[in-house]
Structures are given as structure tokens and as C-alpha cells.
Image 1 (cartoon, rainbow, N blue to C red):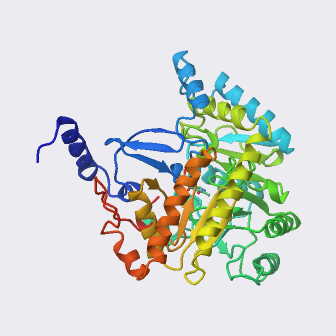
Image 2 (image 1 turned 180 degrees about the vertical axis):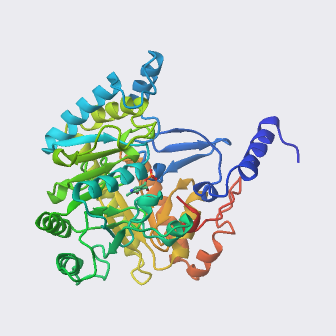
Length: 463
Ligand SMILES: Cc1ncc(COP(=O)(O)O)c(C=O)c1O
């Protein structure tokens, strides 16, 4: 078979990943195309094939790829020789970011948080928050929740429950206690009853914690959303016991729930908040710890890092705040879109009450829970073949996870949901659907001009 030079070089460069890149790579195994450009919710591979991106950087692209106002702000900053790296020196880019964050988010929300710039990823923010709560309270133990995910560095791992990540560290993940998240025992059991009794009584065997670390919606844990009443009860309990409340808003924040912060709807004020992922808006690394003023007991440089404060990310984050959060319009758009998403997912799930697909989550952070992980895998594999990139989460990878950019145009949202509806019909609705689910990863259901390799990796090899 003859190939032109372009095709040949693409083929060669494909193999460089298997030859030279570590086996730790994960998403690339599920979506093996070589992607070249992206705009909004659309992404193209080197063969010119278009996909819809409902994975969106696992929540890092809430405003889509290369959103024009953010991209233009960055291009003009770089063109003007704006400072790229500055450790934690004052720069005009950081100044503008802090001023804009103050005026568009903190003041309107009535929050008087101090901002700590940590190393640029989510797990860096969690490490800093862990140190801070221990330093502040003088206690060691921290509480996390079942199916929680907070990153994979050593401290964060103590709060991340999935054994796949914990076991990779070679050391026991210590210093945290895991307690049941809302709904862990199913409806009818309020886990706050259990938590209050255990943590509030002296001889339960649980050391009084420095803090609770909670995700209001568990992204990696399977799109379970904590109830508003449960969050309020947790916050009140923390206050009554002088235990700090840390909301990890790394995935659920920056608009995903419908408000900038995912805890706003519950009317609670955490002592500490971690943010990263979509904070920069353009997918550039940036992470912060927000803390109540009295919690800011750091000594200068006590927690540091070379990449604290990424000026390019400050520029795009500022542009994102100005573009999307200077009034309430974007939040209303998100809520409208979220209710459409909810309706469509219920329609899809409602067709198969016996097979038990269920809709989970809150706002634009939704999941479709399947009885069998194989079914969720087959749905995602079929969707990929139809040009939709969408992943799974949950303890058994049994939840199809919808994290499309928040500004996805309605027709692209429906296009993606149509593909999911078709894939669910194919996997569950067809006679022998379970068999189809098992086979879908190997054999194409619909012939395509360019057959794609669709081997789906398990959760065990992702993230
Ligand atoms: C809630 C939450 N916290 C922390 C992290 C870790 O962030 P990173 O992967 O940037 O270290 C993640 C990543 O998915 C997350 O979802």
C-alpha cells in the first residue's frame, strides 16, 4: 500500500508514542488519534476528522478550546513582551488577575478570601491546603470521603480513595480518615448522622481532625452530587466543632455547577477552597488556595515552588472572568443548558428502566450511571467512533461523564447527546445488547471509512 509523505510521517510519529512515551499515558490509549487543532467544543485530528470534545481536559476547558477573547488576550500579552515567569514577584498580570477576581467573584459573593498561588496543578493546591489546615489547628488527622479524588501526590493521595492510585505510591497513604459521602448507603441513610456521632464523640477511635476535605460533586468518583442539606449540615458541624471545612472545587468550580463556586447554592462559606483546572480558562496550568483571612498563617516562603503564579495563565484567567463573570448572564446560560442536558439524559435513561441507567450530578457536571461498567465502556467506545470524545468515571468506571465546555453551542450539545442516545440504544436497546457491549470495543458496529482502534482502557490506566 502506497502512502503519501504526510500519511507516512503521521504513521511514524504515531509510533513514537508507543516507542518513547511512558506506559503511564492513559487518555491517549482510549482516544488514540493525533489531535492537531481545536476550537470551542470541536477538535480535529491529523486526518482532518472532526470530533466533539465532551471530555474537555477533564474539566479544564470550561470555556472550550482557544476561546477567542482569551486567546487574543494571551497573544497580545506575549506580543508585547509581557513577563512569562516571575516566581512570586509582583507583576501587572498578577495585579490585574487579583483585582478582577476580587471585583467579579469575591466581592459579589461576599467572600473575603486571601489567595495563595501554589504550584500549577490541582494536587499542588491540595498539598498546600493539607499543610495549612494542620499548621492552623495543630491536628494531624484530616477527613476525606468515600470515592473522593483529590490528586495523586503523597498528601493528596491520603484523601484519594481509589486503590489504583494509592497502591502506586509504594508507601501507605497516611494521615486521613475516609468517611461515607452523602448517599453512600443509598437513600434513607443520612451519613451525617454517622459522621456527627463518630467525629463528635471522644472515644470513637477517630482523632479529632484538622479539616474535612469535600467535593460538592465528585467528578472522578462517579458524578455523585452531595445534597444541599447534607452540605449545610456538614458546614454547621465543622463550625460547631472548630474543624476547618475545605471545599475542593478543582473540578466542580469555575462555573461547572452553574455558579462560579459549587458551594454557593448551599449558602455555605468554606474556610478554605482549592481551585485549578478551568481557572485559567484556556487550559493553562494555574492553581490557588483561597483561605479565610485568619487562616493565612504562612511565614514568607514557607510553602513555595518555582511555578507559583503563571503570568500567561493570569492573563487568560482575567480575560475569562471579564468575559463570563462580570454579570449573571453566563450563569443563567449554564443553568438553561444544564436543564436541557438533564432532560435529554433522563430521556435517554428513561427508555431502559430495566437496565438501570441513571442520571447523576448537578449543573453541567452530569453522569449516566450504568449497571455494568462494560456497558458504559461500550457506549464511550461507540461514541468515539461516531466522533464524540467522552470518558467514564466512578469506582468501577460505570458512569459516562459529561464535562462538555459550558459554552458549547446548543446544536453541538444536541449532536453529542444524539450520539450518546444512539450508542445507548445500540448497547442496551438492541437484542443481545450486553453481548454487543462486550464486543463493541473490538468490532465496529457501523462501518466507517477510516476504521479506528477503539480499545477502551479501564479506569486503572487513566487520569
Ligand atoms: C476534585 C479534584 N481535586 C484535585 C484534582 C487533582 O488535580 P490535578 O490533576 O491537576 O493534580 C482533581 C483532578 O481531577 C480533581 O478532580
